[in-house]
Length: 250
Image (cartoon, one colour):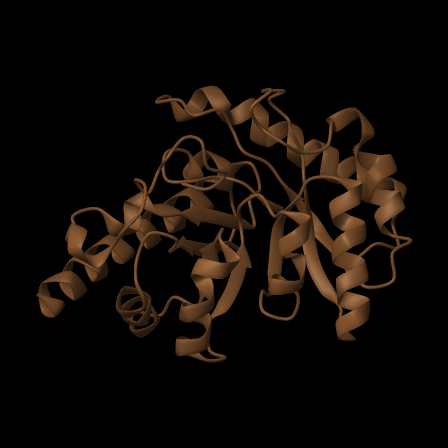
């Protein structure tokens, strides 16, 4: 069973990498400019270990308590990404454990992360979540206020804003959400034009259904679950489907 799972994972990883490379080539970008974040929230430690053996290093989780056992077991090699909604009362559990927080969706959360990082004596890298589509079910900052929000976050002592994240509507036609990704890229470019002293700001956008379009529009991180775990035995995973539309990563 372990060999069967490993072979299927290898095939899935190779296919996703090929899709990344093709999308990057269409956009005139280097494939290695795109970081594949494997959404591992529904699989166990052994599956993540196999992904490590296949060369993946970036893994996304959205439940700090549930992910703690994976982080403890796998040591310092993986880079962990917090990709789901982060509650303020869980901030202390992610500071120092996760390399990048993808979903800072309010100033109160940004300030809580900054305060927790100050107590821990470390800096924290994060992305500001932007609700480009305007869907009420999605959190995040409004596009209109993003520049002001970014400027506020620059005054914080420990939070380092690495860029922006968005979630496109859950649709079958990936091309229909291209304007969402393009809008985030244009917002990012506007922020950079007003702050030429800022470090490069990346974009986290794109999931199994639409990551190729996201790459064509400038995604630096894509969050992929379903495409990596298709055909993997259910006994190797638990929890909701990999592409649950109510979650911020698929």
